[in-house]
Image 1 (tube, rainbow, N blue to C red):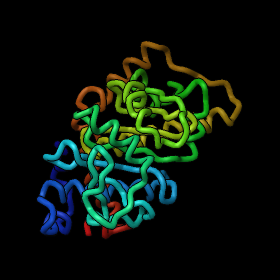
Image 2: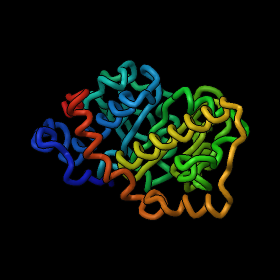
Image 3: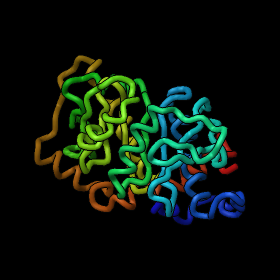
Image 4: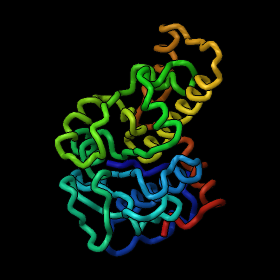
Length: 264
């Protein structure tokens, strides 16, 4: 189940009573996911109304929350999120959902009980990286967190084919990061903060790599043993359930300053 972020939630969010139609734990999941959407927009990692972040409904292994199709990330609120099941059935009438988002996210939520949140968008750097045969190179500290901990899934067209789910899950394996070839990036986390942390730094790794390659300079690659050692130093490998938790309160404080209202 989704961990509640620790003591850093602001008082307004903590004290707000959830609507009668959800329990406290589901409302907290909604608040965190709405915040995640707005943070993705704030850091320039969104793609208008496309792409998705989803979170498993606490206590409901076959249900997850997703964005309503047609809303930009910066306007997502806790109450606007849509609850759907793993078969794509909306449990909240009148809220449209993008079918492609259902196919990708339902596959991972169903196959990976350790992954409660999944993020996939189409950033410029992420899409550019996904078009490279060599994929993510272990050439900077951002990228080294993912050394030997990232999968690759070949492009099969817009993700509307339910049969693709099995192949996508197989390519993800036990990793929490995936390059969707010719498409973009994906991360999964035990919590919303964890998935966001991984997506942010995978995107930074992609941006740095594309900048370095565009420079035309000679690339320095750390030794193999250094790559393995560095990856093992990250909490995402040592304590995956705690990934992103430390920074999350600061991210919420940032939102409270620049784009409040996500907890409505």
